[in-house]
Length: 265
Image (cartoon, rainbow, N blue to C red):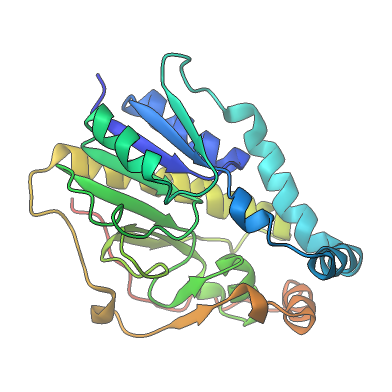
């Protein structure tokens, strides 16, 4: 039986796979796909050239992400009866109308552009949950927090966070967070896949907790856990990429303690 769930997702295979898991586990009433056309349209020839050079110099990093996406390409299984709305940007007014018309109680977010008002404050019975494939508040931003952790020799910060949506970047109150154990993974391909599989698993468990409970729901301000770093795509330089590849072959500090937020028993 459906719980009046709507998914707001990006258009990558891992996003569709997550929506498929929610459809299979709980039933969903609709999917909004953020095509990000307005962002892609702003890319100039210099950016495209830099990306081509990057792929030549650091192809191993790109291939690891591509192989993870290949794994999820066969895992899209949304029932044909579920309506799908495609938008150029997640903040399109049609998203609010679509979600309200369905009567959503819970919205699941993954891989969209930064969500703004009035969507952030959309009144729902359960709320709007967001997935961050990193440990908030310690590591936030992009383009990929797992890569940042490896490049900065912070293996213990590799993990996932489920939070309530907010207007900031990965800044909402935390429902649950967990480290991803990657001690036995010896290459970037398997590390990325394990992090994403863990992310989806944690998301399903956190959603089940919210759906089965009555308010108040788990909601821990990130300030209670301490401070961290916000990484931006423009900071992901060639030097950082070289450091990532070097650190893949070195020792790991993944056993270090870090405070996370467990789900209620």
